[in-house]
Image (cartoon, rainbow, N blue to C red; front, side, top):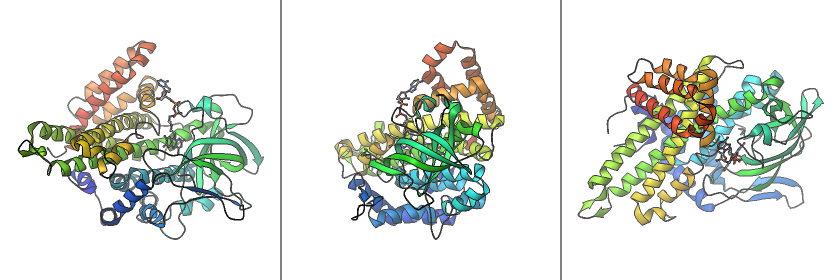
Length: 480
Ligand SMILES: Cc1cc2nc3c(=O)[nH]c(=O)nc-3n(C[C@H](O)[C@H](O)[C@H](O)COP(=O)(O)OP(=O)(O)OC[C@H]3O[C@@H](n4cnc5c(N)ncnc54)[C@H](O)[C@@H]3O)c2cc1C
């Protein structure tokens, strides 16, 4: 059995879910889930580009309830608590609860924290004073962030596909020209944006991370939304195409740190993707269970049919294991998220755990959502019931924040170049089977480079499975 509430699973793992988080969950149960359902049915949100007098405004036409739902999380401290408590854990705890009900809404929170943390770490005093307080606020004016890296020519190989050009304009100001093809949480008051320094060659070294406000210093729009993208799921986060024409921006961190800062921002969202993936899988399990306990076939409720009953147990175990891996990546990130280049070996250990978690949890999420649809039989395919939406929502999880291929290849790179498997082994060495993590890592290192790349997914999966075996002991989830 898996608990029917998100908070209960967290508690099973010994994670403290305080009153404020429980109240937030109650709100979702009473109200939020109904708003979420109607936003999903609404389809793609409309964009009003001009006001009646012909001025460019780029306004999103969500109903007022959407904004209530969205700002509920900010008011519950999903961003603020990280800064109040100097820990990312509340962000991931509230994120698990949010994603159990609506993984799309967790995206705005994720990109907001992935904007706020780099600003906090790398912004000048002046930038921080101006932009940080509303980004981390619970009350009054609350701003949102966004992380815009991907362009039309591709998102995986940023070194060769970012064509947005940044030119210095004096006094710390930069001017950006280009387009961002997948811009989630479009409409945000501040974004972090990847751009290439003017005159520098292709490659990751010429990229830098910039803070881009929604409005210019003269009050005009600093970026334009060309359109909102219709998509199958996560409709509670608007994804648009953004045009930057002489946009004003500020470089974050040292010039030579650019690509590292881009990856730091991605690290936070990859871990959020892992947490959101498990929450979605958990929800899919609960929906399947709710259905199967009352659906009758061949003389029994289908939940009691031996085959399906075993599948419920297996899927429940997979979800718990996936949560253990996701939470291990939260713990590891929390230890290093304030580090700056040059990073410690602990940072590279975290990177490997994050790649494993992002890869594996997204696969589990899609698998659980597909299985929940099958458990519902024909009802699963109908738009009026929850299983259909869960599968639509799950499909994005292996892709954004870096595809499965990227997680596998980058994870292996962390092993080959930084011996990150040794760090994971050291972290878990008191448990049976930890030695296997080291062995697989060494085997990868010893392989011919081409052979290793061709087999990367198979090799990486064996590493993930060895790690799950060990994490099962560490977190001792309650037996099904
Ligand atoms: C709904 C949605 C919202 C998004 N929001 C944002 C956002 O807010 N900000 C942002 O920056 N991006 C965003 N993205 C973009 C997302 O991060 C990219 O789609 C993703 O990183 C993959 O990039 P791509 O689509 O260009 O695929 P490509 O990079 O073109 O890759 C195509 C395929 O090739 C594979 N591939 C690439 N290189 C290799 C290799 N060496 N070996 C094997 N396979 C390889 C990839 O894994 C993938 O399967 C969003 C995407 C979606 C769908």
